[in-house]
Length: 267
Length: 288
Image 1: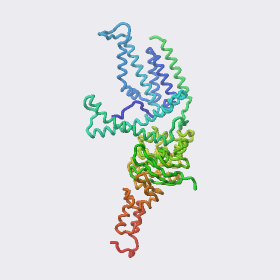
Image 2: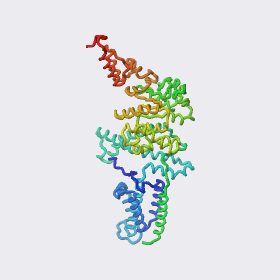
Image 3: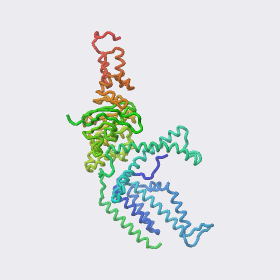
Image 4: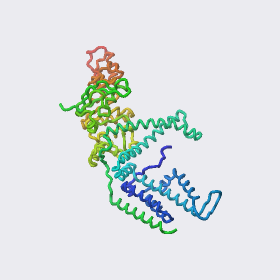
């Protein structure tokens, strides 16, 4: 039951997209989102969708996988669409009490929903094709200049990678505790909402206790392996900014430029 | 004689809010290359002893010298920790990274070793524990014994002179236990590293050169495993039982069989009994 969390999942591979430097991919995501927010008409959205499909194809990510990532967030998409539906201006197509749907509203709703879906899929493409470790590494390097402002970038990156490392361990533990409580007659999926919430207490308390104990032991083990803050760490795996990364960033620049141009083309 | 790798002078340690000291005046000297097993019950002070060996705990009285460096000196902390590596009970709580080789690289990365040199050390450490083929695996998908070997490799990558294993097999199944112990013995054979193995399994002490029995924060017995385990009565008084081999020999002796008590390994034990049964007739008449 807990095994099917796709959020932040990584699909190992050796495609062009996989081989790109994580920094490039992070910049790409930021650029892509910028271009997405620049899009105001059909052509803009078509372009962004085409880019997404191309990326997915290059990374050998099946459309089904990409869409399944949307499932847990579908509520947000629908909610945004509905809100926007009633916010249009112009002549009403349908009216009831305070609700008023216009052609403009429908347009907005469709655009907003597409925008959010593209944004989510774009972000998932990044996590699908980049290992969490590379991602943390990339973030650490990109945010490196903030160290001068005393932002503990390396420490934050370390926290993130440890969190990622312990997700499977804690999921396993949750499963174990759930089984133990079920064996004692606990039920997690029947009863009213309040009853279910209450049933979680005997699950969460042992989980927290164990997480704290783990944290304590991990801290000692890390100290034993000479972890200390403030020192100059090196990395075994160096990030290499290759020619393909330069090309990728040039393509991104073109994409943003085209998005700006399309903004001023009618439809 | 060279500087001992570990030297403890009258070391005591009392935890906060504890009435009794966990370690009570322990003095001990280990030479480089020793393989020492520390045996004791829960609460005998053996884990506290381990934690004093690389400055996780600083003794409340007495001093610990690691290769001549006092663990009370904060400026030598990193040097002390890279000299004495430590492996703990729960492999899950020692592994920091999501990929085996990245985890093994953790310690040298902390020490600021050159990337290329880290690669060399990581590959070497993984080969030493027989986990090289698993270098790209995710640790949480490995077995307990494999995870513990990764943890050992993570320490080896620091190139320590001494490795302290604090009950490394306590959470493992018999297969995992064998894997880890044979990795430790292999390591000792190939590199001659100083090994301190803390355990409460008698059988794991057999291969050590020296066995220290802890009880109530003190060293109760100290000697070769053969010498220590032969003192069956003294062990019993400490609430410990000798390994099955020695117990068998001991009860046979009680029956009047003339057997040595120091045949610790199963093969040696069988050999000793066979030799007794084959002894020339006439020297002894009580055989049925």
